[in-house]
Image 1 (cartoon, one colour):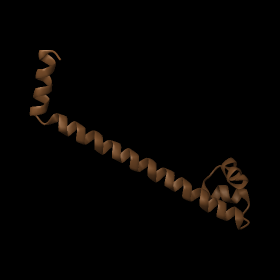
Image 2 (cartoon, rainbow, N blue to C red; image 1 turned 30 degrees about the vertical axis):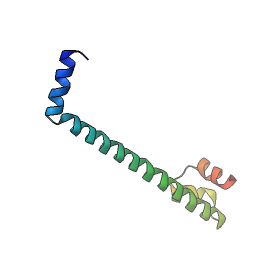
Image 3 (spheres, helix red, strand yellow; image 1 turned 90 degrees about the horizontal axis):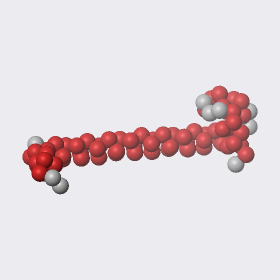
Image 4 (cartoon, one colour; image 1 turned 180 degrees about the horizontal axis):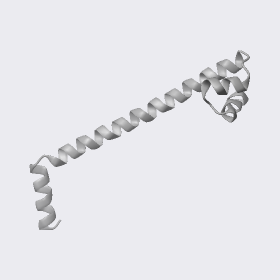
Amino acid sequence: MSTSESTLEQVLEEAGLIEKWEARGKAQGLAMGEARGFERGGSSKTNEIARNMLESGFPAEQVAQLSRLSLEQVHSIAAN
């Protein structure tokens, strides 16, 4: 590390900026992970409900309309 890089790192460290940036990065990563998990969980629940509707005799078109899944997604769920 050159003298100027070392000095910059020392200044950032003394100002507490490195810790703040690390904390901000961790918080952003956590928020993104939570959002993805929520999205995936919601998607799984929607698919489960659509599958139950199909098994109960609802027409695929109605399942698609009510679940807001595409008709292709509903057909895929029905095939599995």
